[in-house]
Amino acid sequence: MEPALAYLHYLTILLLAASLTVELVLCRPGLSAAQVGALARVDVLFFTAALGALATGLVRLFWYAKGLDFYLPNPAFHAKMGLYVVIAVLSIRPTLRFIRWKRALAQGGPPPVDAEVRAMRRIIHIELALLTLMPLLAVLMARGIGR
Image (cartoon, rainbow, N blue to C red):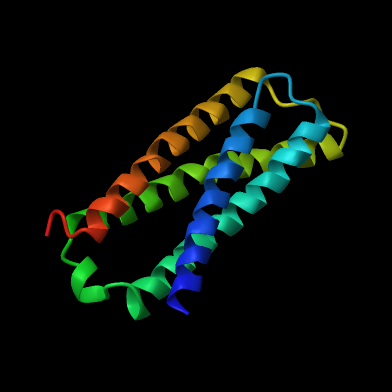
């Protein structure tokens, strides 16, 4: 069971990174209604993948891998969890904007203002940059570096 769970954990992390990358590609000034709709759908996928990565990671933490006694004292573990929380908090604003844009367009409103789109794009860039640090922390954590 542990190898299957590890595989599912890695798969959800890849899906999380891929969906965030797709958001970055889609979120550009001059968004059409179709692109806004796609952004909202991809954001749901991002959220689902983030929850899946968290759930599988927690199951591995509590019942598989090296266990709580190995990971909890490790500062790399705390840094990794902190990054996860920061990325989650950063993602709230784009998610709310994507929903607002989709609703406004559905009611016949104007497309999103380019400055607002660029601001959301900047946040997505930051999320992706922070996400790239998580594998480094995972490697350090798994090898007990920092304990």
